[in-house]
Image (cartoon, rainbow, N blue to C red):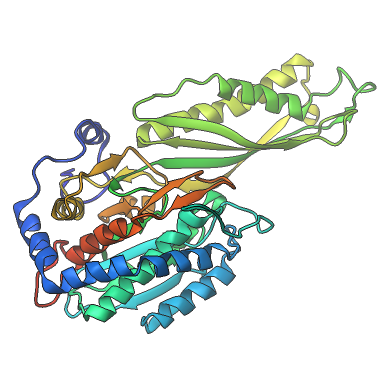
Amino acid sequence: MDPTAGGVVDQATLQSLLAAPLPKEINAEVLSKVDALARSASMQEALLLLQADEQRLINEAIQLAEIPAPTFQEEKKAKAYADLLKANGISDVQIDSIGNVIGIRKGSDNGPRIAIIAHLDTVFESSTDVKVKKEGKLLLQPGLTDDSNALAMILSWIRALDKTKIKTIGDLIFVGSVGEEGNGDLRGVKQFFKEYKDISGVVVLEGAIPPPVIAIQNTGSNRFLINFTGPGGHSYGAFGQVPSAIHAQGRFIAKVADMQTPSTPKTTFTVGIVKGGRSINTIAPDASLEIDIRSNGNQELIATTKQVMAYVEQAAAEENRRWGITSPASMIKTSIKTIGERPGGMTAPQQAIVQTWLAATKAQGIKPELLAGASTDAGVPISQGIPTIVMGCGGKSGGFHSVTENWDPTDAYKGVQLGFLTTMSLAGVQGITQPTLPVR
């Protein structure tokens, strides 16, 4: 497949692209369009407005972050975000059937439709203290950079568009997505792209990614719930007569723990949740676990998943043999349920969406950097052949996915400006420049 034509890049091409991920030369036509927009009076005014708007962005990020939004419990935050979109001038706002917040700013012509996506949910339980704490310039709060500051970034963009009366040629579709984290399994974006079939490009905003870093490769993952079940029995009275579900589970975990996976493309595994047993003096009749398998290469993901599935049956068979169990009624049995499929893939650096971002970094005098891989909402559009990039908000972040998650928003506006120039160049601006992104 031609990597510039869209679609998921094949493995051989993927490896060559990763070896030299960012082109030294930028497409001349794209560079010309971005430069024209960057020099325009309207864009210069918008960039100054974004800088002046930095404190409001921070305040709105805090406002949104302090609304608990565990995966599958995003309703309150979704309502608040829909209200903020409306308050900032987006009249076409809806919360769809699955809980995504969608606001549309129509373009002036039949240009590319661009989805700008930031997720509503966090990895933290509803009982987590989400009050923002300040330590000097540092703001500490679980969920602030993943992904509330990115949601606030969209609001700042909208205000700049309205105040400058910039009219894009292509439609801008702002999405606050649900189910991005954990077992949400990207349910929000999966639903969005079932309904919106005419999206030409996607900009995913992840606040924890520091500008000028871009992600064009999405890490794929498979997640499973694995159950081991048996007859169970008294720890003394039934000893030697029945197998243990927990022991079978332990055999499986030991096999997984010793597994060797490729370092390139990076391929990982972890047993993240383990449950089982009835009491300390019971041979366990049941045990379950959840396992996450990830890779930056689709072939490696498939191969590792296949190996893990083989270990399930091997572990059960070994536990049955250990106690000489031959009766089917007394054997350890297994079941496997898929609880997550997050597609992977890569947007080729030669595509217009990446070239536009590179041209924007040059216009802003910023040295671009590439993130090796990330698991985000971007996996869904990339797997469908839709050109997609992932950008950050601005400032510096730390403590990702922990209760010590933090953000130093100093000069955050620089990341906001870079994202704005990139996205408006993709869409094109009436009277200034045509879109850099082709209509798909």
